[in-house]
Image (cartoon, rainbow, N blue to C red; front, top):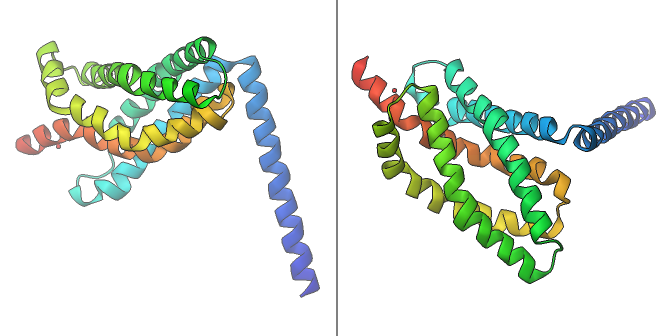
Length: 205
């Protein structure tokens, strides 16, 4: 029993040391390579979100795992979400510094009424370009899905960003956002891919 407890303690200590080292390394990268680090963070969040969506939400489709779809979602996180999020939240923090209640409220309102729709335009635009869709198809997708994406995000991101702008350091905003967004990305991935999947089903999603 003593040996078991000793082994357990050593394992916990080793795990803590590894996690602490990874956290320190991540923060060093945030300081030295903030744009790249945030882009890779978003890549991880969107990739994991789509993997979860395919394995647990769309698992009954019977069509197998779609690696191209995961590449599409992950590359959006890498090339668009991480980079634009870096600049937008840095700008927002510079213009509205501090964590006063009124400041947090203003940030949440700006994020959800201005950045949220812009994000939706970029998200569906990137997916449409990746899939080779026409501009007309892109506009139809916006009409069909953008209102759902914007309104659907309010339930998640209003409380999430209230915590974000009140307690999370500016440099770690995208890490926090991507942690929350792994779950939200399941919804985004489903929404962003449902049109193409429905179309494919008619031909064979």
